[in-house]
Amino acid sequence: MAIKFCSIASGSDGNCIFVSSGSTKILIDSGLSGITIQKSLLGIGVEPSEIDAIFITHEHKDHIHGAGILSRRFSIPIYACEQTWFNMNTFIGPISEKNKHYIYRQESCFINDMKIVPFEIPHDAISPVGYTIFTEGCKISVATDIGHITDTIKQNISDSDILLIESNHDLDMLKNGPYPYVLKKRIMGGFGHLSNDACGHLLVDIMSEKLKYIFLGHLSRENNNPSLAYKTVSSILTENNIDIGGNLQLSVANRGIVSLPVVI
Ligand SMILES: [Zn+2]
Ligand SMILES: [Zn+2]
Image (cartoon, rainbow, N blue to C red; front, side, top):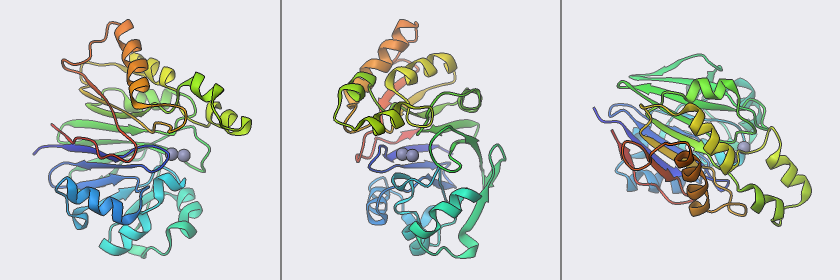
């Protein structure tokens, strides 16, 4: 059966990633309004009621906005760390007990033919995670909101077939941009977000023959743009003798635009 991967949206306005094994369909985060996610799913030929589970990375609004609405409307189970549940409870509203599930870092969780492994990421949330999904012989990884690169991240995302990785900001744009000093410091800090440069070097470190699709995600509106993120990361890859366009596709998961689904 074919695997389908689609970034419904990626960025500080909202994050939602769709992954399907054919028989199992999940969302990583639901950070747009319920109705926007519903419409976007229908746009890629998926009935919202077909979603088997929503996995939450952390409690920031751009990752949980529509989770409660979707869960109540379509009886979709939500999976999140215990502390994340505690912090997002009030915001997402009441969730029925049968749809409330707990995950633990580095502990596999199974949804039919999918094995999902949450892993720790450094970010200023209570218990933030990235996810790796194993299904149909493929490995898919999603890691955004990364303050700095850790061995845990590298170990978990290496040997992926499809990888969505944060490429949040251009360091010069951030430094010279309009954000107040405190916010700049937060974003650049060890628990903020990953720069285009750092993303490029991370990709060089974890590059493997297996990696076929890279999506650059969670781009900042003020401190980045899709062509700059692409240019910075692709230059770093090229400088390190990594060819793009043949077996390896590099693209940007845009803010507020559903990306072209990848099917493998
Ligand atoms: Zn975020
Ligand atoms: Zn965040």
